[in-house]
Amino acid sequence: MNPVSAETNSTSETTNAHVAAGANAPLEKIALETYVPPAKPSLVGLSRAEIAEQLGAIGVAPAQRKMRVQQLWHWIYVRGAKSFEEMTSISKEMRAQLDQHLTAARPEVVAEQVSNDGTRKWLLRLPSGDSIEKAHEVECVYIPETDRGTLCVSSQVGCTLNCSFCHTGTQRLVRNLTAGEIVGQIMLARDRLNDWAGRVTPTGSRLVTNVVMMGMGEPLYNFEAVRDALLIVADNEGIGISRRRITLSTSGVVPNIIRTGDEIGVMLAISLHAVRDELRNELVPLNRKYPIAELLQACRDYPGSSNARRITFEYVMLKGVNDSLDDAKLLVKMLKGIPAKINLIPFNPWPGTRYECSDWDQIEKFSEYIFNAGYSSPVRTPRGRDILAACGQLKSETEKLSVRERQALRAMAMTD
Ligand code: SAH
Ligand code: SF4
Image (tube, rainbow, N blue to C red; front, top):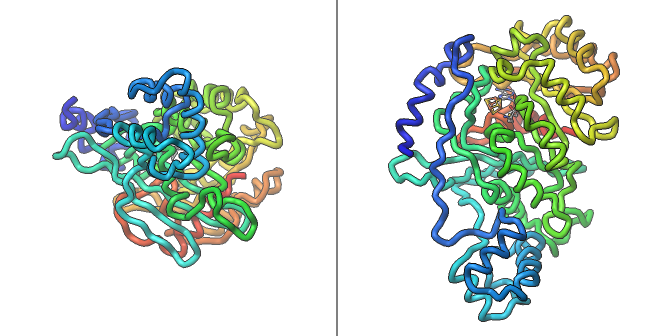
């Protein structure tokens, strides 16, 4: 496919928040599929059956395959091996044979920023399949806290949806990440943090303990790759991050919400942001396809939700738009009967946006109402209007995270 012609589909309108937010704005752009697999495929992101297939293709005898798959799985996902050379329990000949045809490569890191408090941001360059085309870039952020370390992972380059308050939605270039590129983000975070088996930490536990699919892109518009990746991340014989410590955030792709519960079984976060369809149509245009009532029904039906496994409702605080006490009241009312948590996110403005973050005392009033209705403290640390820069609105520039951005990232990471 010619990427340029497909890109024109989004038109320059999508770079203009005013137009994109209008009722007639296109609901979504088309994702470009310009991924070209590397000459030597990476085993990262493949299921056990797919690895066995690759082994078959390079002539490994059927009787040997199961054992080899087990060995490779262990070396790659428990030990974090980046080359076959390191895999000393595999014979030298077999290692050479593997090396000739396959790799254990992760996405290429082109920039890394480390803050004083340990927050780290990596800029990744992914193959675009076209040398003229701008390189595909996504970010991945690690947020350490006392009781956990959360990795914010991307599912797409850009996003096909056009939420009017989201910077990612204005990007024209969109492509789905492969399962390997998604798992690869966790792998490279562990590489950079020296967080593989054998590493001695004061608590004995890993540094990356939680994963949130809150980076670039709509994970439920890349369902199969996200599912395959998260099943690998949760696999007990490998990376082993429990499903309860993995949260997938969606703008409300209703048909895939139940599938998420059935086929992945991770924690769910819903980007609600409005309690009336008219407003939500404008903030999250996907609402025109899947309105609030349908979305909430999917949440009621979400397999495995319970008081111990609550669904998180994200609500971005936009001044004079969705932050009145009436909104708070309706929010509480409409979530009745759903095991829910509410995360109030202070809006992070970006150049060209028509929205502003709610005033702090309005956020407090809103939060107090929700608290009194029985929802645990939704905003945890006071912060100003110009905060929050990473999850959900990851930028491709490699500027440094500010202190306030780091604080805000923590708020986003607090999903359980
Ligand atoms: N596409 C998915 C996941 C990525 S966005 C989704 O929409 O849920 C992660 C979160 O960041 C979402 O709740 C999103 O609405 C929010 N977000 C996006 N832009 C934001 C901004 N400028 N300020 C605050 N939150 C934002
Ligand atoms: Fe896409 Fe989520 Fe941004 Fe909406 S908020 S444009 S779904 S990344």
